[in-house]
Length: 346
Image 1: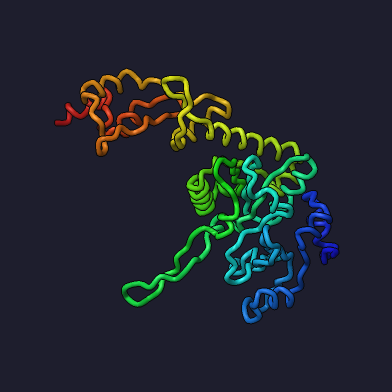
Image 2: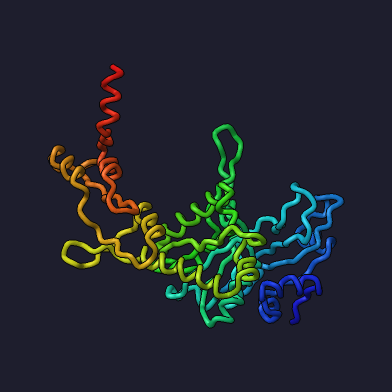
């Protein structure tokens, strides 16, 4: 079946190097204002606004059953009218065509983007470069969380309980590289940054090795699709490879005293160290600084926090004495200058 896409939309999508065959496989179509209102059931909303745009239908990657739709409005008229409109009660994610064969293959990296157009642009890039990626669009920085149910409160009111989309359960995450390629406004909008961090936490809880694909703040660049249009395939592939290298480094196991590798989750400070040092650098633990060793001797090597000695924190420049002491419930040491100043004010 040929995709029902207008000439205007075809030229727009061609700028992102999305092929007509991929659009046909994704069943993307152009909608008029009346078609959008009828499809989403919003005939009485947004009076006087033109809601014509591109419809991106969602399909179950296993059964190919339609699970929802999201429409990208051509020209947002006001701030009250969002750029994208989603079908009511849609709890699902957008999977790029051909995802069914990759759901259980953990050797294939999963790339999570915000918009469906970005997902199709990356799918077209993967096809041109001969690579395999499981590409998923969340529908927004925080849209991967859906309303699961309503909880009855003690005062008789109800509260919506949110959780991850059930489509996350379709993907085998354990041991997989999960790359989050959100839009470049993650650097300027706290809500987007918070949503990305929450998604990272969710993916790590599912035993994935997570890294960020950083889209730089540049003119005419917001999402991965814009980056491909402005900078080309090589720049986008380089950003993906860099993030994959960081994910691989995070997945590496910390070397123990016998030279064997011992599995453990990387600490946030280790993630920071990887991003600042670059992928491929060893995370083998070393001795803490002398000041920390002296403080341990003064403490008699007593375990803290319920009898368990916490894991040492690593800063990007090695072990930080202050961080090392804070993990053991010790107060940070003041420098001599601050002690003299404090003593003189008494």
